[in-house]
Image (cartoon, rainbow over all chains, first blue to last red):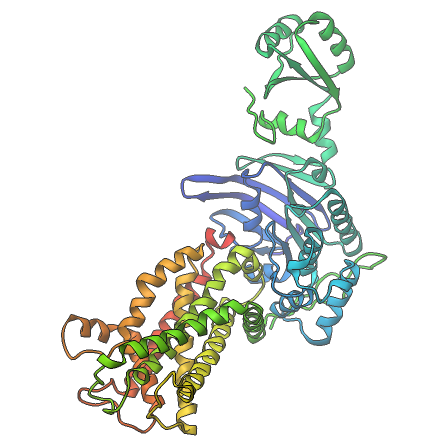
Length: 312
Length: 297
């Protein structure tokens, strides 16, 4: 069944016992696209990732990569995907080269062709001088690079990255995203990446936001932000409940409780801010205003923060 | 073999497109590479050598010296057989078992360290994965058991062991190594079946002390199989009994140890060990083929 989509997911539901980890997820990723799955940890994105990487069985719904069905043609899928897991998958007792050698062999690559590939990748990822070092002696950033190299050895057409920047400092994270962008522009690789970081989500062409097993939003970061509209005001108050009621009475807008603060989306934020502070000078401890971020999109769609904090 | 064509893209400064895609789904290359990894890992963890070879060696010397006086050689054995000599093949089997167990515990480590999930998403047959693990474990086990069978009797020159009555011939050496290999493969497969569903090494230790150690103790390795009573029946139903008996017969090549009240005949030993191994490999393959939530850990 040929498909023009690089990745297609339809009606995927997954249960762990009685717990529904994914509920009727559907989306598609175009060839060459950099697609992000954003959501809190435990929201279901890693489950989806494991289904796509052929580790978990498809319980309900259908999914295919490059037209190959994940349920019935896992072998075809495995030949074409490069996978980088959140947890490291390189053997710490082996050297960088040995790790890549075994990986090559698993994909049927050997001999001179293998050595050339490994050398070129190491060169490209600036790992050449660590070639014969044991992986356990490398820093977190270098280990990640070895993981990436491992996923790229067989020229995959689709790259799946699960929280690739876990444990990386900002510098290494920046480098990593630089590689990912380079890869895509140079090789036209389709990339699916999961993340819980807004800054990373912003790098993607399109985003799917997953919360509690539901796909709550699906669009480009810009359009998602635009969908929230206007400005976002975050108000801190010592008596948020009372203040919310009085704001609703005075201005006819109902603030949203997010954690201890109140949130209001307004077209003309600066005017509203002025009126608000003038009306309740004693109740407003502080107020901040900004253009909507992806976090605002998340709150708008789910009613709660990415990190805990239930809204009412 | 299955070649897969990848789209060719022009590279500028970016990652090199490495020209044609290379993925071939082979069967034996992954087996060899995974087995080789086992050996390299083993060599880099010296403590495993001490655990697998040192402990049985000490067992052999201490139990041999301590229990020697109260040992009555079984009817099938030559009258002058000492306990240490009787115990020698038993300890060799213990080494096979320990080594097999240690190398299959590495499945749990591989799962925890994440290496396993990388293998599971590679386009290899699940049987390649199983055989890779088993071959690696088998080689390690056989090398150590052979080392013991050579070093142990040699200790008689320093007084730590009595001299042995069995002659060392080329034929007995070859058949012994052959049988050790079969038995090691079987035990490694058994270890695999136990280790695969577990997610902690603690769990494995529990299984080891309530299942594997008794299995070894009741295999005729530590004391001879009795003529009657419930214990003799347990021992006769224990597949490892046939492994130990088979090994005794290859060590004493030529001597007729089987018979009326002797050890089970060699063809039976071979058959039981082979069948037991086949069942374990089958189970290991079946377990590995399942795509379950545990694999994703």
